[in-house]
Image (cartoon, rainbow, N blue to C red; front, side, top):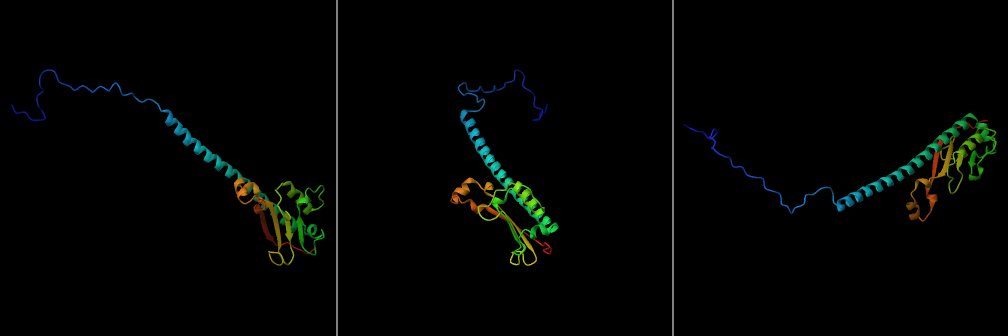
Length: 194
């Protein structure tokens, strides 16, 4: 009988098997986390949450600044539309010779507006924009020396945007918040003939 390696006959009798080694009785099995691992995880999580809180504060400041800028742009375009619709309400206020108009800090509120420009001033004062540290809140310059050129009117709105500035930046600049005075300048053509 020829036997090949693949079909080797089994030895008769009891098969010998190797027993699995027993675990050492002195080695403890690890279950759960150690206190140091938990503390490290809490530390990493708290640093991440502090970073998210800082981003949230920066986002709120940016949103406040963007909201204020949007209100200023809408107010400037509204003023331009009112001046185009009623140029007499602008030029009969005693500014016809210079072609300028200013809305100062003390011009708010206007109790009983009589024309379109005064109604706009009241609506502008109701926006409650923070006033600039110096100068008028609103300037309209239709004179020949305005920055928009001859035949055009410049509508300039100023406000203080310090609410969008972090307190640390103000302290570093010596507490001078007037550096945050913002200005929106809008050029338009308004008929000056009455």
